[in-house]
Image (tube, rainbow, N blue to C red; front, side, top):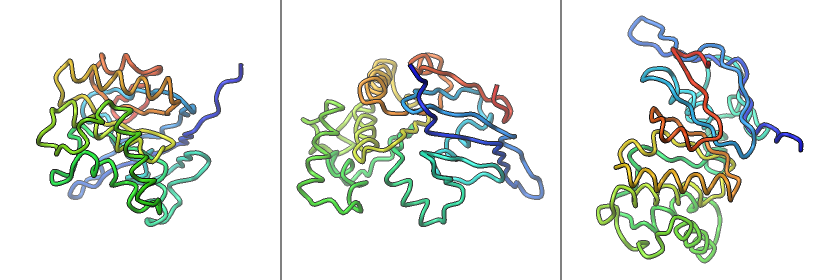
Length: 226
């Protein structure tokens, strides 16, 4: 059987940040591919550049040099508005602290990415119901974030991430704020999304238990991929 073609192609990317008069290198000449349908864990100590690399892949930041192709699109060459539109339709985001809007219900939080999609209200409702059903929270759709446990809030965030059917899911320490039981539930859900729905997932974590759910693990040490 042929190996799956890469959905992410990273070539010679470098990234540094300015701090006062200093130039602080974060990533140095990174080159690798991520296959379609992969579940990849990026590990490394704090300050190793793993979140920066994730943000570059997701189009939240731009490299200083090199290229990043996602689904054949050179995202580093897109305009700011073009990049925002690309992110909205191609990337699902899962964060450590959920980033839910506290005054919106679970349903409304999941619906947010669809509001600019041009879908009718009925179609949006169908998409949201499917996404909340996928994370087993159909019975909590009218609850506000403050009425949900941490694990339930993260599952709402995952429903929001998948509701647009994105090409890739990026997760930055998604279990870092959860107890072990809730973390296991979230990791099992991500495993299902990968195995059963074929979602390409890129997970940043320092937790070896979380990384063990991935199919592939890559390590960053001082901005260099090992």
